[in-house]
Length: 278
Ligand code: SF4
Image (cartoon, rainbow, N blue to C red; front, top):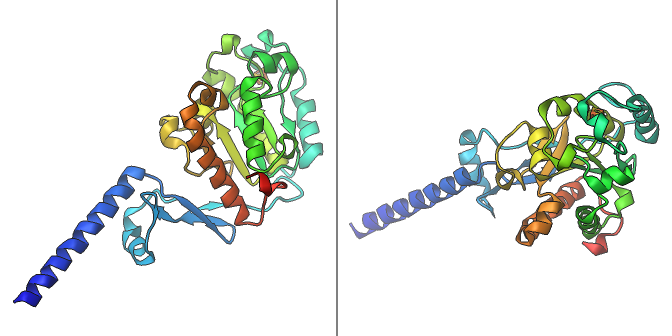
């Protein structure tokens, strides 16, 4: 009788533990991401590594588990056959020209195309140029830009090792949020930029850029830290450096996001040129 009681107690404890784990997974939404042989597969539950057999049991109830592929760059864009790298970016810039495709053209000082390595492994994408960027014609050059540069350096890269651009190439008046017709007019340029660079990873900066690229209006606090894809390229949503200046307590989670990017890239053999800085 005592042995039967012990067995029932052990069974109860096991069921309780499973309920706890499944509850934790439900709150976290998307599973943590791990990469193996060029693909990123679900790997953590509720912030802790789950035993293999538990993952196997839980699998049927996990429709949102991410499977992402970090593909190797090719000499031509897979979608268009257009040239890649510097030549592709120059062709696109020539095509954009003195763009008048949306109403933001009338208010700009400079069109802010993008800057950095045309063969970059990582592309950082923000929302739109601000006043400093509009004046200089370069993305992320104000205080937020200086913080972004520090974040890039903390990852072990120099600013010129990566590529930096925005969803919109012209400044919205008064730094208001971009409007849908402006995004519709300008986003094809971003897609062509990415097709030319063909990065291994996109880091989307801030609520607007993240929501726009992912077509997902969930709060940035929920989207950040979970890998998604854009145009077939793995994308890490994180906070905008301007937001980090306003709320320094968010720097720690933002740094966790950037470390996840480095870890994911390292699994396909992409390491920063200055890993000692990380
Ligand atoms: S925001 Fe984009 S689409 Fe609009 S005028 Fe500038 S470059 Fe053209």
